[in-house]
Image (cartoon, rainbow, N blue to C red; front, side, top):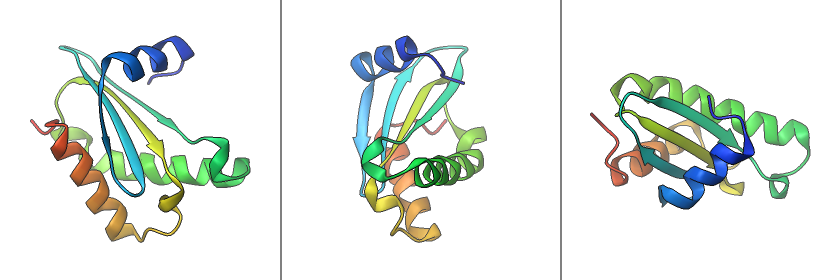
Length: 104
């Protein structure tokens, strides 16, 4: 799990990013490492809304995790996440993961 500001900053600066309407992916390939981090900015609303957004991202990531390459993944929630249905969120996840070429 990515937890420190230093780790997040490193991936933001060195990794590749992919955007969709509800989520942004920052990916940094590294051998032997499989880490993930989830963020939601204050633009999304209060703590309840931000935590709900991160929970939704975690739930979808768990489904795709076994089929992904090693590396550091950071998912950033966007405002469109709240309006997105479950199917739309899955499609956005698949879109950003395939664009970043993260499927093994």
